[in-house]
Length: 348
Image (cartoon, rainbow, N blue to C red; front, side, top):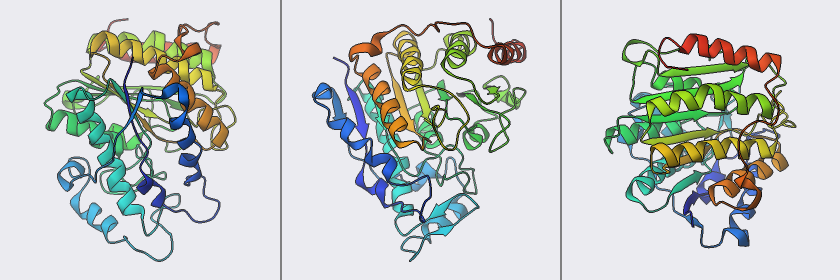
């Protein structure tokens, strides 16, 4: 039986948006009932969030920026820190516990408390930069977790894979000159935030440890799975990470109001299957999923269910990951370009 640590803390709901904002507590409210499904009894192991310590946060963010965020605690009405990103009375508390939950997940995996993990933080994180908010994000949850793994747990190879429809600019920038964190992203391009070109491969010691596969809008399961098979998995097998972190954004879902991709709920399950098999082969199964985007509530719910089914080996989630059809011409072109750029650093 696979033991899956989960964290959906009520404090994450204290991040309260202005009216009609797509990033709202309803995203977690549709996930909460999934965690109580009878099929998962004894398999999902809830763990409590803890507030991230400043030493955890300052590995990624400027202290002056964190102090500015802290000063917003208790603000009477939501205010916008940038055109997209709001902050409310409870947002600073939610953000600290969101980042802290990812740290707890890493420690739980490395200490053997569970085999894999899925954390459901709000606010999301992968756009947050060292000194500013961006794209609904305040604190970069996955980056904080990866930095904890290298600094506190002495790991030398951490893989962060980002399948959110938007490129994770904050995560890329956090590790762009480092080789102990390999960042991979497939994302819609051109699209917000404008980063993530195929030629962005890292700098200095990090050269070759940043892998971007930008895709035009309209790509679906067959292209995503082909990218996993032909780009991500060959590189990951050479890197042999000691831990895998997934920035799990579900806005590539085919009905997402902020997206333009065509991925199905089952498609997310099949990508998860590929990553779980990879983790089993190279790092004793240690893999943690961290929620990022996803704004079609039913699609978010169904996609998360597929991921949980794979993590718990439930039913149809045991299917193979090979795409049933070859990639589209657009997907094939993206794969060939990525392999051409990355062949300077990796074997294909």
